[in-house]
Image 1 (cartoon, rainbow, N blue to C red):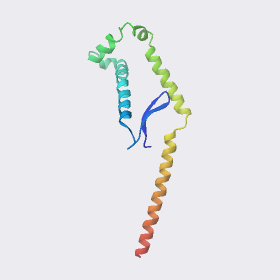
Image 2: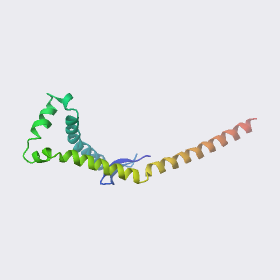
Image 3: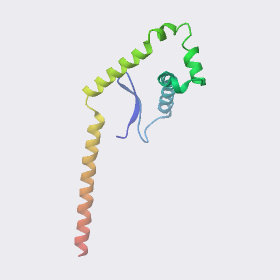
Image 4: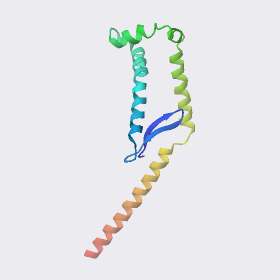
Length: 132
């Protein structure tokens, strides 16, 4: 419940915990987020081409990046689109098949909170009985 981080190839990379995360973990996670900004922008530009028409993003991703010599074959054969679909499908299968550690932790936290509330309730009842 108190952990947040990035997963790379199904492995947790630099998880962040409250009051227990080093600065290099923040820096690495920020670099990964920035690394993902360009592909997300390109995908949105292609997915919403009608809305992105005549914008700078359309010029950059629609013509300039598409016509780079190295990437031309990838775009002509839709390699990026198929790659993203395959990775999404594999991630879906993985998350359906693997049990979630977070749900187990959440259940444990709920049980702890119920026990603590029951103890508080018992203490409050004892205090009230003493007053009467």
